Image (cartoon, rainbow, N blue to C red):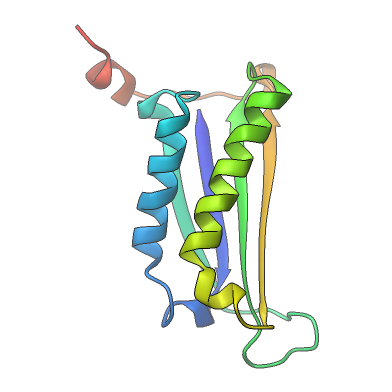
Length: 128
C-alpha cells in the first residue's frame, strides 16, 4: 500500500495540470520498486477555503502526504520521499520561482494492526 494524497490551493488549477502531476507522482512511486503496483494510489484535492501566511491573493500551496504500510527501512522511506519531492519541484518549478508558494511532503507509516483493506486489483496484476 502506498497512497499519495495531494492537497493544493485551488488557485493552482489554472496554473498546473494536476492530472499530469498525479501521473508523474505515480510513475515515481512505481520506479522505486518499493510498492506493489496494485497498491499505488495518487489523488489530488483542491482546497477552496484557506488562509495562507499573510493572505496575499497569489499565495498558493501543495501539501503531499505519502501513506504507506510498514516494512520499509528509514533509508528506503527517505529515498522515496526525496524522489517524490524532486519530481514535485520539477512539476511546480514555475510556482517555486515566485515568492508566494509552499511545497511540502510528509510520510506516514500505517500500522498493520490498525489497517484493514481488500483489493482485487492485486490478483489481476499478479504475474501468472
